[in-house]
Length: 392
Image (cartoon, rainbow, N blue to C red; front, side):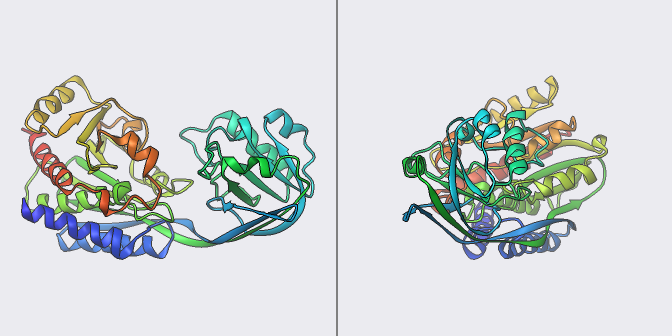
């Protein structure tokens, strides 16, 4: 037990303190990939880095001047750089957007156009026509820049986060709307840069037979150490790999550290889906760990594409783990890649996941200070014993 905890702490400190933010394509991301790959190799696994093109997005700040007054603004993630000046045109509906003249103007989106984040153009899993229409109008009209107004008063929730959107884009807090409405002219400066880069999934295998897949994502948003999202998942998998390295099983073990779950186009997931999931019959089962180890919470598991026999097996097995609870399925996360291919899958998270998503995820608050290492230790033990039980 103590060995497991020490391993978890070592991996988490390396990922979340020494390396820190691990945005896909960044130097921190590359360091994390190299660390995980070397850890698997040391344990005797065959390791493959599944590479894909991406961007290393740099952000050195933003500035917005409206009728001579400074207004707080952030560059939208993945936004192009700009230094533009022009008339402000504020629109709050798709009808207003369609009729607006945006030539040589700065477009302010608010109201129903900013009620939720707009899906990136390349997102194939869920991309409503309503979202596509907004982006289509903006790209056709080509304003000098776009400023989106957050649906939260005090948080600049980014409405557009898309490295394929080629109009410079900033975002402001909801309370700043009054500073933009009925104003005439503005200057927007975005000191950003899109640098071509290469990212990689880490895939480690051991043994032969049909695959048991274990996944987590190694990337983060640019400004967070990503302890629960998803350094904890990576640490659990690296520790689990150590526990299973000397075990003889009927299955091949496949550990997949996805790289891109928090990147706009999920390039690691798309690459894995296209290259590695072409034959789903190679897999018996898949586990995904994301958001596990939250303080004041228990470990949760949810099932996808599992038949009644597997469901009953997991229900019976988890009885011996009072801090592991079954929850309703949630269609978000990398487990859906496997489930979408018809592979039985289990998502391991925290029962209070909704609190994590609302207040902590993607922020600097997602640090080691909110991690419960005892819960992570229980997750490793649960997965270790569950792996042994599947073929009994």
